[in-house]
Amino acid sequence: QVQLHESGPGLVKPSETLALTCTVSGGSLSSFYWSWIRQSPGKGLEWIGYVYHTGITNYNPSLKSRVTMSADTSKNQVSLELNSVTSADTAVYYCARDNMGASNFDYWGRGTLVTVSS
Amino acid sequence: QSALTQPPSASGSPGQSVTISCTGTNSDVGGYNYVSWYQQNPGKAPKLMIYEVTKRPSGVPDRFSGSKSGNTASLTVSGLRAEDEADYYCSSYAGSIPVVFGGGTKLTVL
Image (cartoon, rainbow over all chains, first blue to last red; front, top):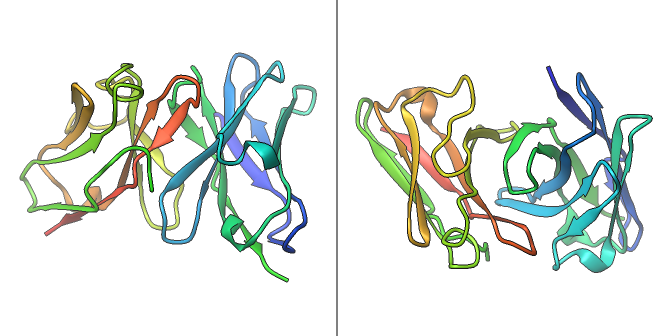
């Protein structure tokens, strides 16, 4: 059974960089797209971007200037960095697997809450 | 503002059917057969219920069905049960972007 687990600091200061890791167990990164999706408190889902196992990335245009994603197949991990954060970036961050890069997210992590505050 | 438009709420009594709509454009819902639906319970991660407009993942009850007409996709829940009460989100492939979500619909079982 594929499992995804997000990890990283739960509190980030404004203007700093949010950095999260998603560790995949029970399966390989290969042949899948790995997306980061966030959900602000009480709000809907927002796609941040994806990284393919080869390292190819595609980001939401609204966040593209601040986002970096990468994949480490040796560790079975994908990572997210979001720089210059503000309170608007406070959200639960999920990683999710997409087998086609076409919004078909069949496995999700439990999510991790990141709060941006001084 | 979300890229795809969903009604904020929907409701039905146990045993009834309810349909939730998801309206986009020719660039997303209308242009591709890659519409998915997710169920989210409070404090939990979303769960895939429908993918590629009409397909159900293993383990999803056949009471859940999906369809599409033009730029609008729909999720129908038949034989409503109390456990179906949750938030539902649609998503679509949108070409270069390539993922857009709806704003979500809160389904209440009366």
